[in-house]
Image (cartoon, rainbow, N blue to C red; front, side, top):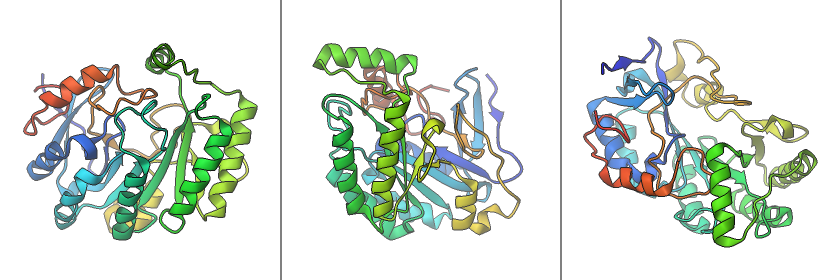
Length: 307
């Protein structure tokens, strides 16, 4: 099948990636793509392969998403030397292995976040407390205490935190039932009033540590101190890296309901992340993701599928 180019004339924001954890599991693949100057991703609806340029002259910024940036740290000097602008979304919830079976402990990840912030500044590293999972093991008061402790440890390290409540897509509902069968834990889908009250409390807690709380794709809790999130935010990127956006603003292009993101190209692939988080909408099951992870060839232009 022919590969269609998706690179516009203006520089492109590269999302790397909402669909999988590239900085944790696919650093060799990413660096090979960077050195070759191109990547291929598959449209998640049509399956059509699309090629996008990774030449630094064609890339406005690399926007990373990860639960563990430690494997990427040794490669940052090379990415900088090649001229890439970078923004880092760092998901650290501390929910534990019942909910995030293969995610490293929060304490170690907070240390890595501090290293990123020291290198790029607190505006370029976005902490994600995402999602807020409500269960007998993690009730609202647990989140209030746990979130407050994390906010205090990150005061001056980050300027914003993005959060959401669990989105119960079909995959997530199946995983929720499996979790209950395996552990006996019932994960709640809280009513609107409870969501709004907890979000307001978390916003007050964050504000006390000079952190803005922003809601990702949950506009029903955007009120008071809770702001709307824009995970790929062209305005933020342009303020951080003004020389990369000389050709004009990047258009808003939401990826789902209530999304506030600007236009980007995501080079990841579904069913390739072995973290095993029960709430993940991007994986059918961990076994399939683990199989694809183990089979991945760094020299293949795309993740998850052979060209």
